[in-house]
Amino acid sequence: MTKKINLDIAEVEPREQRLGTIIGWDGTTEELAKASGYEARGKVQRGSGRSAGSPCGGCDGCRLCELAGPFSQGSVCSEQMVECQAGHVRDAVLIQHAPVGCGSGQVEYNALYRNGLVMRGFPAENLRITNTNLKESDLVFGASDKLRQSINDVWERYQPKAIFIASSCATGIIGEDIESVAEEKEAELGIPVIPLACEGFRSKHWSTGFDATQHGILRQIVRAPQKKQEDLVNVINLWGSDVFTPMLAHLGLRVNYVVDLASVDELAQMSEAAATVGFCYTLSSYLAAALEQHFGVPEVKAPMPYGFHGTDAWLRELARVTHREERAEHYIASEHARVKPRIEELRKKLKGVKGFVATGSAYAHGLIEVLRELGIEVDGSLTFHHDPVYDSGSSAEDSLGHLNAQYGGVRHFHVSNRQQYQLYTFLQEAQPDFLLIRHNGLAPLASRLGIPAAPLGDEHLAVGYQGMINIGETVLEILAHKKFHDDIKAHVKLPYTDWWRQQKDAYILARHPEILQQDEKEREVLSHA
Image (cartoon, rainbow, N blue to C red; front, side, top):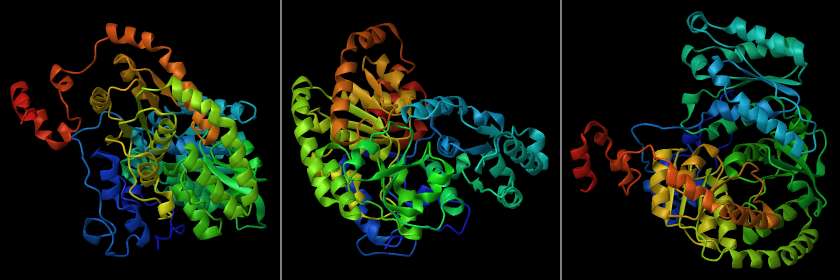
């Protein structure tokens, strides 16, 4: 039995503690799956003691061996994930109780919000995120009054149905009592005022920010079910295009998209849905498990909807939970007949092509499966973190195990938290023809190496049967621009030393951090040892 999610406290438990999340690892997918021990971890109540079948000698809270480097070149923090979740609720406001620099992501997330609204058929508008602009004096004397004033200001300006308050490293360091201010203003305004504990140092991986937003929504917005809507399905997503509405319509189901681009009322009705699904367990794990545990909404426990095998299994389990098995079988058969001829054409055109995937954890597993369906070789991949188990504990959600069992393993599989200097070595090792990537900051490096990259701004592009065609056509499109990237490679200089470009081990600084204190000759000796 998995540990029950605690909604009685305002702060979410970080993923490192809850799931054993890591951000540095090197090996094969088979080795990582064995070390993760998903099934054993899923069976034990985490935090309760030992289980004879669990990894590392039986301690359910054990951690995977992690390659921790001596520095970090770049990442994203949990507060930014709160920006792109709570900040994207249509009729709410997010207040960042932080120095103004923490609001720099508002520019990027505003573009995503506007584009997402248009893709979903809503009018384009700017997001509603404000920042309390903490100064040095605020960090000395406290800034509760400044937070109260900001709450009053956004209430007067927007009349929102909910107000989220994101903490920051600065407020965490001084111990700002955001929760008390939120309780005071909630009683005064009569709407949910929700504190979100998301200081950047709270967790070393940004995915905890997803959980922080979802935790606040579960505690203060989701209502006790007034009635069950037997045809309503919660789809936990980001801001991608609406691919789930037409897909689920074939089963006679309606979609309730959460959290991004949802309204407060749509979030509140999550408790009334017939089921909850997601396109990526990294994003959906916490919210889906909590909805089942606290509100009785079944989480669809199946492989993610990527490739034929995953999509078939996902649809069949959703149909079983919602009692629509016959409709699902008809839809599956018709979609197989529709897409297989085009997929065969794509396989012929893509024969001999080698790809590389660099995205978040579970999403990467699904993308590799899609590429394998297209006959594309994938012997190298980068994920930005790894969760050994998800909150449900169900082995049906073991996305890494599903990849290994149904599509075969990946020989060079890396976990690295957006460390560009390591990606250089990964790409040199794999020598791919193209790169699929979610976080675009790494894409320019691939171009400098002559490798075309497809930044997947629409995260739903690869979902379902049509998703295989979408990815195949995307790959053909970027390969057509190979000459452009070859020209870039010929005319740019990489920012790395000769010593680093000669390294075969991207994790040498994690294994030997003392190298940073040595001169060039000493480095050469150690790196060849």
